[in-house]
Image (cartoon, rainbow, N blue to C red; front, top):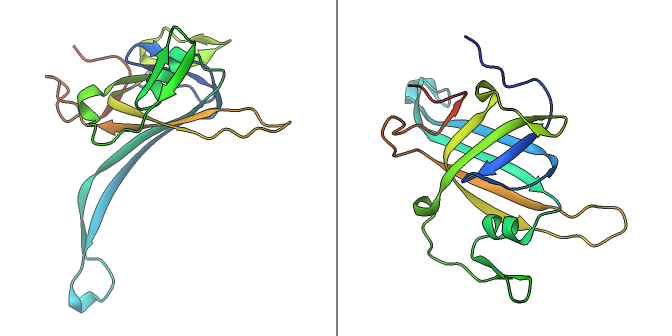
Length: 171
């Protein structure tokens, strides 16, 4: 059975079962295997082998037209103040990310409706959003919040060590 992740199109971004809103500029999923070359003097700079050293997985998205509730989820140490209707962002130092990481699900959108077909979904089990707002105030560009999701291996039984999967959970 092959996976059907679609050839083209936008996606819905759900983090911890919360829709983070519309994106502008696409969503990029990256999964890079890292390695270190093994060398021998007799072969000079040419590697004779390589050893895997880990995997770096990340998801990057630019969100637009975000609500205060969505921004609160995307930006570290942000809190929305219901009495004033504003967002307050504090300096964050020393906060462990894994403890509050959550699942990220990317669902293809067709006619702006998220796919209900689970074989089309991409699940990243443990992610932490790192919001990087950079607002440009001009007459031509739309403002977005760039968020890079840092990804960690899972610790849940049945998924221990797993970082991501395509399609539904196995039974």
